[in-house]
Image 1 (cartoon, rainbow, N blue to C red):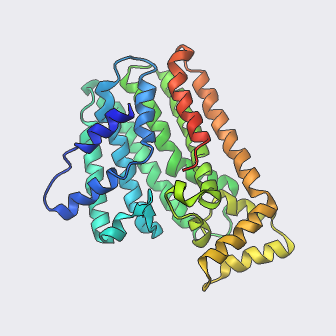
Image 2 (spheres, one colour):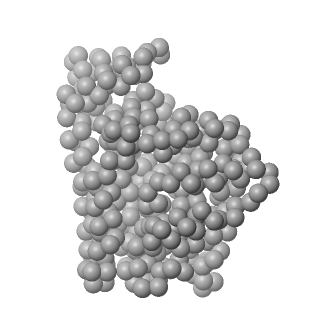
Length: 318
């Protein structure tokens, strides 16, 4: 399935002129990545049919939309790296990245137009709701930058919107394309949403404790930017005395050595057991997702490829 996805992605005719508009799209799409979302769609559809090949192009719509959000998110986050390579706004400039991202959204809709006419209205309604929720999540994430009262519940709802709903749609989409009934497509959506929350918590964890060479993004970037992650929110609730004062000092610091700040805050996280707390919460959501998958009414052997893929996400290092 991954080979089929990559083959079609490499030949997608986004456009040619002007090259400054389309070259950044090809650049970002060819950086690779896990292709998790379109794989979710194809693995989901394959639970209900052996003929998943016609769904490759519609599945790529989810990947194009995801990369559109990344291109714009990287501008907002001033991120220097994406998958170990310069981000589009760094390699070109922010204006190019904004406009190329806009065209990617158009391309996603063009790919969705390939699905059966009888399914198109349902899919578009669900996709539009999902797309709006992703934007809501991104706005909440930006709002959190200036808030000092972000709770664990606030954060989990934000990542549900920003990250998890697209994974939920991706699984649900595969079921719809393959003709699954409403109960099964609902379970697919719920599974994807829970797995998506677990996936983002894993991402938060890797941002602090991951291996730079494997992670593909700047390790410690969330700490440097004072990003309200699950780890920071838990630390703010637990830190007291000297740890609390040190954490507040680094959060308030305007001029600092980035690597020194990352080391200092990571030490505070270690002393508070933040790694273990985050991992426990992450595993809670992964377990919820796997429970939903177990309730889908198809034989276990047809679920096995999707379950194996989810388990790889649980133990990933990038």
